[in-house]
Amino acid sequence: MNKPRQIGTRSETAVVRYLTANGFPHAERRSLRGALDAGDVTGCPGICIEVKGGEAAKGASDLTIAAWMQELAAEVVNARADVGLLVVQRRGVGPGNAGRWWAYMPAWQLADLRYQTGRDAGHAFPVRMLLGDAVTLLRAAGYGQPTEQAA
Picture 1 (cartoon, rainbow, N blue to C red):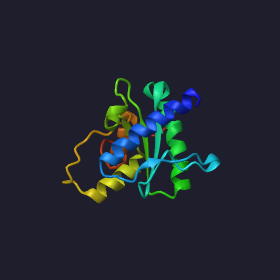
Picture 2: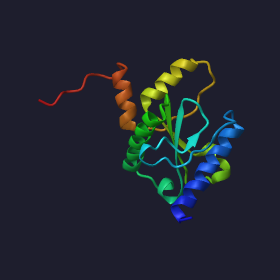
Picture 3: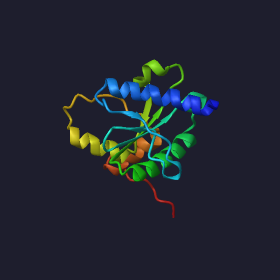
């Protein structure tokens, strides 16, 4: 097995172990599907999970994350899933602590999930996003003052 495949296997296995221990007992690594990739983890109905590990994940730039999110969007369609989740290994956080790796999802999806769970669902966890994206969300929700439009 080549090194990138070993890294992928190790990372996906870590995420599956975390999922099976935390309410997704049927989670398992998905076999490769070629052009119609449907994510790396199966057994979580309605959810498409893409996992990135190794040095590429630990040092991923914003542009890399954006490209992986585009990849995830296509995989969500291929998997016919409702929810897409990109899981990215963090520097200094090994496979035994996969629950502390970064998880990304589109903001609209987060809002939909938040609406379904309600405010008192005990979910005061942080969500990672760029300040520019947070400002976009705040402005769309009516916060702030009008900005000058370019003429």
